[in-house]
Amino acid sequence: MPPRTDDAASPAATPAAGRAALRIAVLADSDTRWKWGALTARRLTGDPETGAAERAVEISGLLLRGRATPTPRQLAEVGEVGVDTGRVREVTAVEFLHTVRDEAYDVVVLALVGGAVQAMLHGLAALELPRRPVVVTGYVGVVYEKLADGLLLRHGADVVLANSRHDGERFRAVYEGVGADASAVTEAALPFLGGEPHRAQEGRDTVVFAAQPSVPASRADRTYLLRRLVEHARLHPGREVLLKLRSKPGEHTTHIEELPYQRLAERIPGGLPPNLRLVYGHMGEVLDRTDLLVTVSSTAALESLHRRIPTAILSDLGVRETLGNHHFIGSGLITSWDHLDGGFRPEPDEQWLAGQGVAADGTYGAAYDTARARVAALLDAGPLPRLAPYYTPATAPGYLPGILARHHLGPDGHPLPGAVTPKETGRVRGAVRDTVRNAARGAYRHGVQRVAPVIRRMGEL
Image (cartoon, rainbow, N blue to C red; front, side, top):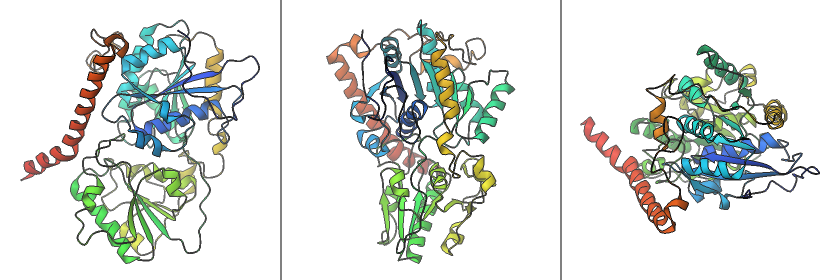
């Protein structure tokens, strides 16, 4: 079966004489991980600013079927990632493995939650390909919870990207602490940093609150943050105040959003003030007109800091691990709405910034040099050894089989009986399955955003 070309690199990517195109598959399970994965593929194979590469690059976009599979609207709002989103297709884990077996990719980027990464690593190992692809994975943003769990589930990839020097040190410590090989840990940066440095403009005064799907989680805390944003807008009627939302009700992102701010906003007494608007879209475009970015712990803070936009991390609900804002201890950015209402603007600590991969000092262009060199060396090394994750049926017999089973793989990484592909089911059965799946996904989202909160409230009575 001849290789299939899903998408070509930018025109700036010109193949070297006599060299075939570099073929990359990006497998993602949410909108933000798709953005991270696609841009990581670009950073690893070309110039970080221009996208130019020594050889042509073909990127195939694949979405792992699940509760957070992005909608076409979400894919469109991710922004320019160098891949035709109209040609991105949805697959199951088994379908993905069959695609890798048939398509002879050079590189596979796993932009997935930890358990899915582990399943794909075992599935890829079980393929026993004579020449397997280089496997790359990492994190989409700030790593503030489940550090050991997430890292060990990613162990076994050829390259585990760390978004900063701080993360690189933590990642190696975890691997070495359990006796696992830490050589795959490679320092880089978040692949979606960019944009022009902040410049104040006369007559423009825009405050943006970057909302998060699951932080904070409770209705009371989310209502509090919305109320304070409304009060800030009313205190400053000449200021444009934007509530930047990740998804529309019914859509899912990397994390489940049980209480969308859109629903809470409908209950604000008197409605929202005229200078407060709800906005969607590409974060980079919103940051283009931002003069102050406010959030609890969103990765948007790092994008903002990279562009030297004044940035505030809220302490109103406490500085706690469950909120993720503890990651910003020492940054100089932690403050409260009371202070922001009075005109305070935090100043970031330069030493803290230097360790976080923000690259506000202009070094971002070199952030992927080490990772690019590592991938290139692996590609030139000839047939690579079999993938060897830390978790095996011998090291984690009570944990690994359940992770693999969720993706219809057996303890040995091979597909379980009945885990079939659309080619094997036929078009009609495949269409029926897709209809049932879409209905189930809609019911799940309705349960998460409508039924579950009601049941929770009843339990609190």
